Amino acid sequence: MDWQLLRDQFPVTRNWAFLDHAAVAPLTRGCVEAIKEYAEDMAANGVVSFHRWDARIKQARALAGRLLNAKPLDVAFVPNTSAGVAYVAEGFPWEPGDNVITAAEEYPANQYPWMNLRDRGVEVRAVPSRGNRVAIEDIRGAMDARTRVVALSAVEFASGFRNDINAIGELCRSRGIFFFVDAIQSLGVFPFDVNAMPIDAVAADGHKWLLGPEGLGLFYLRREWVERMRVTSVGWNSVVGCHDFSTIDFRMKPHVGRWEGGTPNVAGIVGLGASLQLLLDAGIPNIGERVLALTDHLVEQATRAGWSIFSSRVPEERSGIVSLYRDGVSPFKIKKHCEERGIIVNVRSGRLRISPHAYNTFEEIDRVIECLKEPG
Image (cartoon, rainbow, N blue to C red):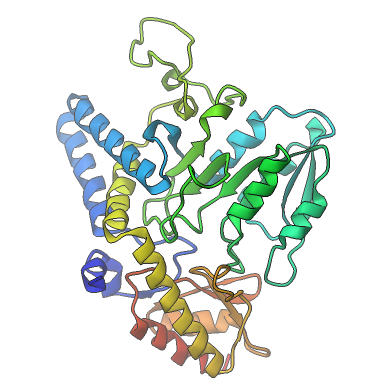
């Protein structure tokens, strides 16, 4: 790979060494151009251009299908990850006494929608991590005959721990448990194949590793669950004949598209589509290898600088997120030192969190290391 060609697609590199993709990523040049093109066309032509942009939505959906190895119609565009989680939480056929299992350290988006089910008699079982890991034996131990759903992130946002999605999915499938995955910290970095993986639903916003705008994400639901899940946000766009506005015919789409109830976020979709094209052209396996090489370098050099690595670096458990700390050193002060020197990192759970993407360089990682050597 000529990574410089990829790097050229990121205007942010003119101003910053941006190493915070686990938060909100900068937009790609293609994403910005697509959004600008849509805005200018709508200003000049309005609804006359509908068919042009409808075709671009279909194109972006096809790219999302490639990313997940799913049929395009099994992928819906949603406002954010929280919406995808809520679609499952509110639509699942619960009975009082059922329970859902998640990790205690999950991002709030994958906790609050399940907690909101308590008034329906659904128990939330939050499994504590063992240090930097979520142990599959603890998930197994939390299961019983009334466990209906397991909801986990592919990569934990604070620790960077990469869950063994295949093993957990197989465990769920063997017990008839629905498996939901929040993939926001994984999609765009690691290959994700919903046909090969025992997953029932996936949600992921596009504004992190997918390099898209905020307010637009992806939601996948295995086709066999479409009729079993209640749709809680039905609108004009949920039905088969959605463009025949004069006919009321309540036959919902036979796929996840029934959750796209209203008018789509066209600007967000075409912007995300441009970034998806860039990522897929580079090759997701290539991106993953590059990100892991950068984080391996970061871990090695940070350790030499006297920092401790909280994130698991077991080969199959490492990700694009590195969480690190040093006794007596404030991560917030280091974050400030970095920003003053044109470097963007973040703090989560009281630790410094660094999350480079494939367009970042080893030289940028070395600049961070110099900041880590300064007193905090």
